[in-house]
Length: 208
Image (cartoon, rainbow, N blue to C red; front, side, top):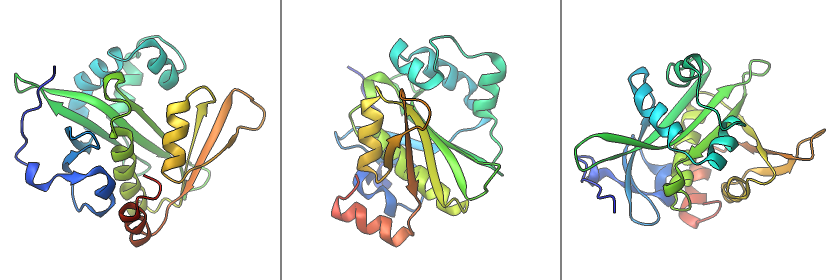
């Protein structure tokens, strides 16, 4: 069993349902009591991101890349060297027994160049960390970034068989509809609410 080493930020950990009220990155406590660190991705995280993708099951990798293939070097570089003028990416990591860092999830958005107020969102969680509240915590943190960047609408496309993603999206207030022209895909969309409204939803347990 994986043993998580206590973080110096542990005192600032927030319950996942209260993430919207958090003021900074750091350690967060998931619904099952596990602690992870959520932070922005950096170019130095290339080995973490590569190991993360390679560690995904074929099904999870396909849902992310629409292919079971490995990442090409240019694709990997693009995932970690982001352009903050139009995108953001947050990763979740845990500290292993030997002190090394292991990536267990990532959420990102890319602003739609056709409309500066809209951005496409994507999230993937390691198989062993699914259904533990990590997707919820990552997306709530990403919501904060989106608001700060002036994003008014987050949207995404996922396969209709990706039931876990669709359930998560609905819990967090995304509208879910079939993608026009392709019966195998679903479109999710969520308007970014003011922070005070998000905090009220979190406290009330609505959408999370």
